[in-house]
Structures are given as C-alpha cells and as structure tokens.
Length: 434
Ligand code: ADP
Image (cartoon, rainbow, N blue to C red; front, side, top):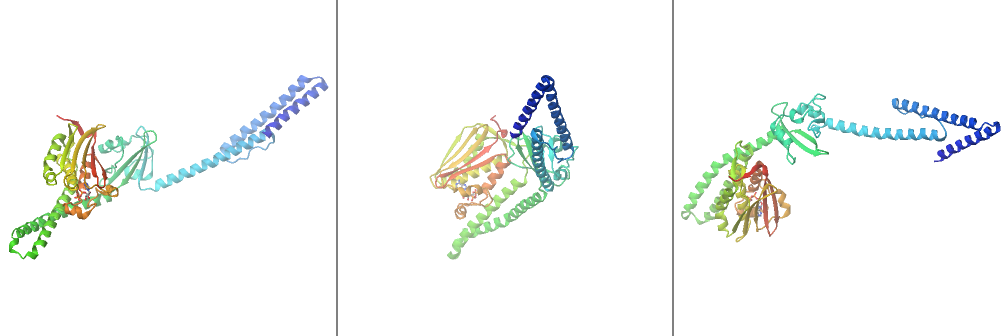
C-alpha cells in the first residue's frame, strides 16, 4: 500500500509541476500533455522490462528481476516471490512423484491404473513382465483386450470386487497370477497383480497330501473299527477290565472315521472345480429333504423343527453340495441346543438374493470365536464337540461349498440364547420354480 501511495504522490507532484510550469509559460494544456506522455512512456518502458524479464525467466530459472523503486519495483519483487514459491511447490511435487514412480518400479506387484473407459492409463515396470504390456503401444488399449481370459472379463465387469481372481498368466504358461481390482474416483480402477505360482503349487500339494492321507487312512480305520465291533459283540467272554478300554477304542475309532470322512469331503470340494453343467435345484424339495433327514437327531433331542419357506424358486448349483452345507448347519443347531429346543429353517428373498437362515435357541457362541468358526478343526469347546462326535470340519465344509456357489455365510450368536447362521445366495443363481 505504501508503494501505491508514493506512486499517487509521484503523479500528483508531476501534475502540480506541469500546472505551475504551464501557468508560467502560459501553455498549461501542452505542458500537461507532455507531462502525461512522459509518464505513459515511463510505464510502457517498465512493462517492456517486465515482459522481457518474464520471457527470460521462463527459459532459465532464477533470473533476478529488474531493479526499481516505487510501484514497479514492488510488482517485480512480488512476481519474483510468487514464482519462487511456485517453483518450490513444483519441485516438492516432482520429488514425491519421482519417489512414487521409483518405489512402484521396485515393486514386484504389478500396479495398473485403468480409466473409466476401461483402458490403460498408467502401469509400473512389473506389469510389463507379468502381463506382457508394453509402453507406449498398449497405452489406451482396453484391458480386456490385453488379458483375454473370459474369467478376467467376468471379474472386470463385476460391481463389487470383494474377492480376488486367480488365472494363468497371459504371457508365460504355467504361472498363476492373482488379480485384485479396486474402484476409485469416477469409475476408475486400480488393478494389482501378483505372481502366486509358488503359493498355488504349495496349496495344491497340501490339498493332495490331505486327500491322499485321508484316503489311505480310510481302510485301516474301517478294519480296526470292524474288529473292535466284533470283539465288543463277544465282550462277555472277555475279562471285564477290558470293557471300558474297548468302548473307548470304539468311540475314538468312530471319531477317526468321522474326521477322515470330513477331510475327504473337504479335499474333494477343494480339488474339484465346479462342473460346467449345474443342477437346477428346487428350494422346496431341498428343504423338504433336509427336514426328513434331520428328523432323527431332532426327535432324539426332543427339538421342534420349524420350517418357514417364503420363496418358491430354483437354485443353480450342485445339489449334493448345497444339501450337505444346509444339513450340516441344521445338524449343528440340533447338536448345540439342549434338549427340547427350537430350530427354525427359514428361506426368503431379500433384494433379489435368497436368504436362508438356520436359527436355534441353544448354547450360543461367544463373540471372540465367531470369526474363527469356519477354520479347519476350530472348536469352541473341544471336549463338548468330541462328545457330540464333532470333527471341527463341518463349518469349513459349509464355507467352501457356499463360496463355490458365490454365496456368503453370516453368523450371529449370543451366548446362552442361541445362534443364527445366514446364507446369502446371489440372484444370478436363482430362477423361478418350474
Ligand atoms: P464340529 O464338528 O465340532 O461341530 P463345526 O465346524 O461344525 O465343527 O463347528 C465348529 C464349532 O462351532 C463347533 O465346535 C461348535 O463349538 C460351534 N458351533 C457350530 N454351530 C453351532 C451352533 N449352532 N450353536 C453353538 N455352537 C456352534
């Protein structure tokens, strides 16, 4: 502001001098005209200096501004200060960008940015190796043209990306890649791709191992159990001291048989990929069958089994698997509910998806156990589970089967009050009953 005042002061002095001199020589207008012209030329001269300096500065950074007092000097200095601040900010941003680029180049994971048209915007170095994408040729190419596996196209066009996708690498055969998409901004996507070949092999080895071991154990256990039963049938001829150990051996061999059976089921679900031709399962018939088959345990424990069926539809999937998952949940409800309990099997449509609930008023499960229930061999109370003939594999089987049907499992429970197991089967797998 002080510069502005001194400039005003300068104009007033110039005008005053011109007026005085004009009066003295009796040529006020001409002298005023000359004085104002001189002032205009002075300003034009300063403007020229400014444009010259700005032009020089844009080519070569940090050229000092022209020296001047008054308002022009202030303008030069302020522009210089602003440019300096902007240069510092831009250097800082460049530094961050360089660091981000360097660190993303060092990553072994491929990072790809996909714009809302579904074409490639940016990617890091690992992408070129894992997906064979080349710069600049593949820029603005549709990602589904570059990764041609139909499973990728299905995954890419999903609305939610809560799961990852594993497929063979498009470049080198024999390698397995895991894709994870995330939406951000305005329908843009960030794609992360990892090489999981080693992990995939190890998982396959583990699956094969479990499958083989359970298969191999099946026969010896059946033989041991068979002989034990024959011996127990003739226990009267044995010393009574042996009665108790023999009973224990029988119950333990029964447990072993159950474990081996469940392990075989689990490993066959894990190793078999979903068949191309799937059944169309009538929900009504499926629930009817579960009701009939669970009558034995329900009656044995004096439970009341209530069926509430509000949807008459068909599910596309594997009948035997869905039967096994739902009956596992009903049997669990019966097992973990004290005598005379109430078990409800409910099915209804909600938001187009099918919701199947199995609710009991049994012992319930403490909150800290709920997230771990579907892990293999996880049991809340191992001794109680052993008593009920449990293997700790039932819910792991249920979870696997549901995942193979794109379905989800939710568990709600209050200790002492009961539990609710809810399965969500997505609308894509439903059709109206024939
Ligand atoms: P298990 O063969 O031991 O029943 P599951 O995998 O079927 O194994 O279940 C894991 C554990 O979850 C069980 O040991 C039990 O403690 C608990 N659980 C499962 N269902 C229920 C239920 N309806 N009510 C209470 N606890 C349950």
